[in-house]
Length: 68
Image 1 (tube, rainbow, N blue to C red):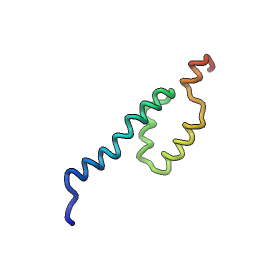
Image 2: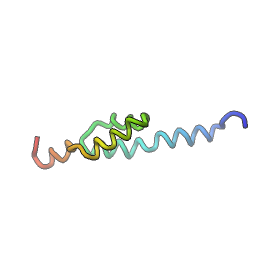
Image 3: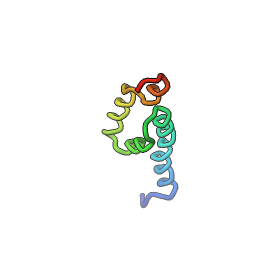
């Protein structure tokens, strides 16, 4: 079999990094910091964070409705 090729690592890197862009945009629009997208790399934590963000009150919606 041998060592993994350059293309193997390029695909793995894309598979890991590409989801960060849409995740960070969703977090930005929801009113959270884009840094939270780094939770994507921690498998048990990213599932918990997904549920927290899905059911938590979004700061951007609070600002739009005039609530604090």
